[in-house]
Amino acid sequence: MKILTVDIGTGTQDIFLYDSNLDIENGYKLVLPSPTMMVRRRIQEATRSGTPILLAGQTMGGGPSSWAVEDHIKAGYAVYSTPDAARTLDDDLERVAGLGVRIVSDDEIVRLPSSVVRFDLKDFDYPLVAQMFASFGVPLDDLAAVAVAVFDHGAAPQGVSDRQFRFDYLDERIRERNLLTAFAYLAEDIPAIMTRLQAVADSAQGFDAPLIVMDTAPAAVLGATFDPVVAGLERKLIVNVGNFHTLAFRLGPGGIEGLFEHHTGLIDLPKLETLLKALADGSLKNSHIFDDHGHGALIYDDTPFAFGSGKLDIIVTGPRRSIFQYPSTSLRPYFAVPFGDMMLAGNIGLLAAAAGLLPDAGNAILASLDDRKDAGLAPWDV
Image 1 (cartoon, rainbow, N blue to C red):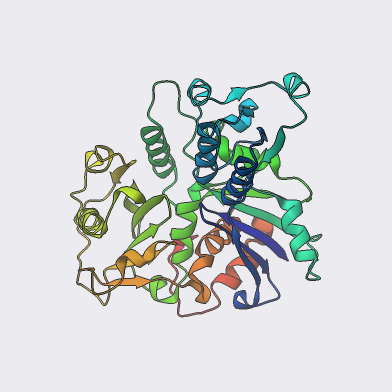
Image 2: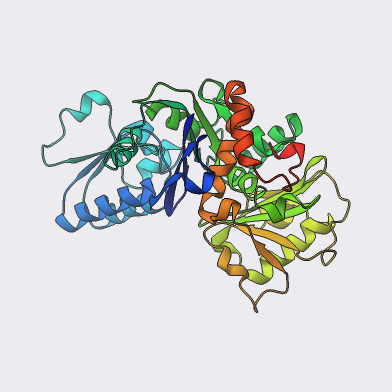
């Protein structure tokens, strides 16, 4: 049984092909530029050549690609966009138009000048991934499932903060089902408000297998729990330091005890240490994060998590985990390496989610993930 997992971040997309006949360490994997970085480079080429561009296709992750669009406009060159593609820059199309982007319909596209270069946006390009594997003699024609992780703010109603809207969503999911896998869905079950997850489903073509989508940060945190050191801990504080967002979960025997999410660019190590200590002792308030332009904080169990009670204080994963390097930190971090590879944390989390959503495949997946009998996996981990 094979499952293709793709964890799409801001800097990279991490691709892992799970094969139940192989140890996970022997599975095929690729670490490639993220789709938004790929689009950014192409837009920059258009800017250098002075070429007008058209954004079409789906809503996808912004950041680098959005900044490239803004630079293209500042340089004096035209940017056209369909409504769906324009939501890559902002869900509010009036704001997008205010940047100088000209929103066009499908009928108007055919009347654009022939010099306009078209960009078909999408986070997940299955044909391209399949082509890469095929070039190494690995066909993807017998997949049991495809699982993709992206970060999704959700489509906030007019006048509602994107940050508040996302955190209300996180709170709702945890209260409904206190599991990290609560943030994973089969394609047909994606909530209407999660527009980027739905865009992944809309662009996922070329395979005949179930599609699972999941939020990136919970996927990485869940994957980190499969590090054998982490799995043996009854209570754990895990922080995923991403390129754009830093999300920390406090986990215990009953599930998620608390979490916070902030923008990585707005925190330094002292601030992050302060937030983690407050999450640990249960004193962290939503206002501490939200008023600092982060998403927020949630505490479900204020029983203190004691720093210094064991051999480590926090579990760290994510592409910017080096913020915790010694001797600058006062904490004792452990850098999780599930199956020997930090970059696979999100992919392992996707596999764990697939085990819960695909009953026919669940036993085989769990057998692969729990192949170390001393790992001590807690039931809520999957």
